[in-house]
Length: 395
Ligand SMILES: [Zn+2]
Image 1 (cartoon, helix red, strand yellow):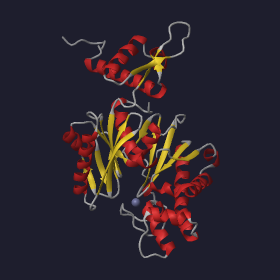
Image 2 (tube, protein in one colour; image 1 turned 90 degrees about the vertical axis):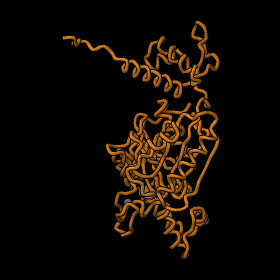
Image 3 (cartoon, helix red, strand yellow; image 1 turned 180 degrees about the vertical axis):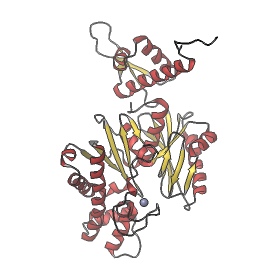
Image 4 (cartoon, helix red, strand yellow; image 1 turned 90 degrees about the horizontal axis):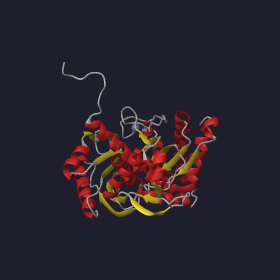
């Protein structure tokens, strides 16, 4: 027998995987704890000082780490501190919205340097795909160098591992290989996720919730979805659909949902559902837009207030169920509905606290997101950054 038996020697592939793992550990330490010395990186990552020095040299050659002065001396020579330069790389972050595609150029700290937007003419999936490609071409053209890659957030069920959009109901995309298609077109790494899941990553990565160990971000817009981050990772479920709370049946109202069924949470608490209720409250024949509805709400119009706060009650109950299901104590609300502001938010929070088990609700913190209207693009960028560099929190 020529075949060796017993001891398995590490293959070339194993060495490569170990090196990549070490690079990610060092990058993560730099992102979370920088400015930090080589010795402290070694302590935090439990890598040897030699390994850390080698990785730092490699990262420095790639422009991903910079010396930024010296830290306090602990007796000997003061240690050199290292940091990831905010602008070391640029990322293209894109949101396939309802009626438009929007994108931004984002650096490793979540600063936006350029934005593009194309309004979709019709709800035509093929046309939307062409517009998305045009938008990406423009953004790549605006980048300083070749971007690190492209992140995309889209409504629907998205298998991030393969880049396949399994179902995006608003554009009737089914089993569409969006990631591979855009990768072939641009030659860049492309990652795709559900937009609520991506937005959760944005809050996690750039939102400054640094003490949280896990987080749920609930996005309320045209649709409603939750993104769940546990131990620095997006939890997408066995079929990538984790957090699809918008299609839980909550009302016997007979209102048809975009998914084809009736009574889903989206039919009572999303932006379109709320605008329809506001229209009725105003006794108007035409649908108000979100800004008009927010103005009517802020003037204290009683029927409009009741219409909007009814939406908040439904969202609050959905949060209550999430608290009981997951026991994650950090919940963030994001998306267009948050423009109704503190009164909407307070009702959501109170209803969540009221409907969840008190023992679980009491320590749970519910907050509005910190990132504003760029949150989906930032989430798409965070998705790419997490996948390509292993960075989980911004530098
Ligand atoms: Zn539905």
